Length: 265
Length: 253
Image (cartoon, rainbow over the protein chains, first blue to last red):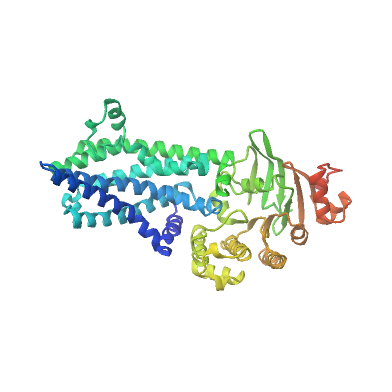
């Protein structure tokens, strides 16, 4: 791994945000809107019904922020690749002395940067609007954050693989990949709400354990170590599988001439 | 005799039923400009992209600096560079930002100085803060060439570098490339549809047709061989007829 190359790539992607403030605005706009809509909806329901909704609001706000961690991490990887495809820069990039792992590391860094910005903005909004202090939960959520980021990175590699294989036609799939797993991940509800068949799929995803673990922390304040370790184990499996798929697709794209095709489309 | 900087042996590439490059064996010497000429679909760009590792050959081998390309990809890529009309630099970054980013990617030591030097060399210093996407074709070509020279390459692959340029700018670019080649003893593989480009700048020419070499030699030798007045006539003759009279032997040259 050459740090200089990784920093060069990170500089290339982050300069886009420096140059164009609209991009920075867009980065926080959607998560903020999501938080506003879900938060106010919950408050509205709370007013219309009786019962203790305080915990429910915390579940929902927490889930919204957590989901964005996964989504932004995936986007950091996928959008970086798409940026080079849109600007027809892929040939210049892959004809430069860059190892694939350096390229992936740079896109993962971009995911981390995106997540950091989004989490800070959303946490402040949640605190101001709903008195939900993410940092009340102390450091127990940090490992779950990290697990979601790693899973988002795996999903990002899968997204790039799809684009490498099917070109621009798969661009919309790159956005859709996280949403394919969203219903199974039990983001906004507990797993037992799902039908039995879907529960089997749900327990194969690291994100399910993370969201269950997050709810446990919000509910009891206690760390669900069991969920954490299982999520970590499955995450490692996903990372290897998605990495293997990416390397295989990249090699295949070189073999079939797809890399040059999508680069000049 | 010095070992060639670039050598391909029986290089072939097929995409399904289509044979894009067929048993291409060529050698490029130090300080030489070798032109790859051929009609659309002759296999020039595919051959060049294999030499950059963007396409994997079906068979055959590529050696650059006497090293096997597949085994020493990163080392080789750090010592070569390329420019193509079909590959843009990020059009949402400025000229200056692009050069800084690619300097880092190529491991250039003094990034700032090198970027300045390149902008001066290709006379785009005044465009440093301009977004690349807003450059004219000529300016964009010069920026691509800045990137291509940023790591002081020993081997340069140029894919139609003067396409879409007006004759004046094309002439300036050719002159500059030729000057830099002489100053730096640079080896260049050059593809173009512009016969003037090829005649003016190339020491040797390889004509490709349906992926294979049909003739190889200097511009004059090729014209004599096909009994044509200009390279353009040779090009049209090959593209329309495709017949090889009596191919010159690569060994002879």
